[in-house]
Structures are given as C-alpha cells and as structure tokens.
Amino acid sequence: MIRIISGIHKGRKLRAPKNLPVRPTTDRAKEALFNIFAHQIYWKDARILDLFAGTGNISYECASRGCLQVIAVDAHAGCVKFIEHTAAQLKMPVIAYKREVVRFLRQCDLTFSLIFADPPYEMPLDELTGIVSLCQDRNLLEENGVLVIEHSPHRDLSTLDGFQEV
Image (cartoon, rainbow, N blue to C red; front, side, top):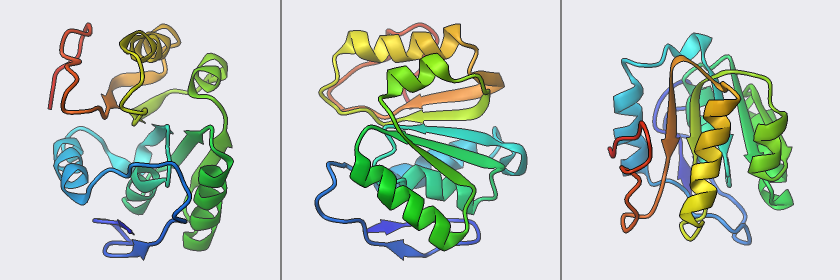
C-alpha cells in the first residue's frame, strides 16, 4: 500500500499490483526526506526526476505537493503502466518512461531541482558511481539541485565525491 503523505492528495492510499518487482520507500523515510527538502525546494517551480521509479511513490508525493513536472523512469513495463494509469487518474503532471536509467540519462537534456534514485540494493557501486557521474557530466541538476540515492543501510556512499549520508 502506498500512502501520499502531503499535498493535495494527502492521505490518499494507492494499491499497486502485487507482481511488480519493487521495494517502495517507507512512509517514515519519505517524511524524513521531505522534511529535509521543505526549505530547499520550491515545489511550484520544481521539475523532478524519479529514477528506478517502481510504483511511482516518490513521483506522486512530489506531484501532490504541486510540482511543475515529474519524470518517472523505470525499465519494468508493469511499473510504467501503473505510474501512467495512476498519474492520469489523479490528474498529476507525471510522465513515465520505460527505459534503462543510464540510457535515459545519456539522452536527457533537461535540468531538475531534485533527482531521486532508488536503484536495486544489490546494484554494484561502480554502476551507482556511473549514474552520479552522468548526472554531473550532463549538468542535469539545477543550481542548488539535490541528488538523492536511496540505498541499503549496509552500503556506505559517503565516500562518493560530494555526498553526505542523511
């Protein structure tokens, strides 16, 4: 069960199909994350990129807060279909792409206030580093933009250049 915690759809619960290969961000983690963003992101002007979007949990949270646009990227057709259906049903400015994340980043020419990546926990560190490098090299973040990578509590990303654990 997905619950939108704030914005115009606050409290709305969404039920994703059980056959999706996902690990949705918990309400507790979302609340902590969005409390941090409260003074960093002006939602009405924000363009958000949700990588490895899964159910679209983060996309809906951002859109509910009034984002200008949210782009959700996932390689799984079922995830993309669910995101498209839910965004249309809720009239949210969410565009979903069925693509491998690296391929999408190589072709992307937009900038974002927030890039949120929730890759599989078992993704090798060099692949995570490659995603960070692509975001930096392609200047995908606006000035003062934020890149967040959700990861296993057993993985330390603090050694990556410019990162801090939250």
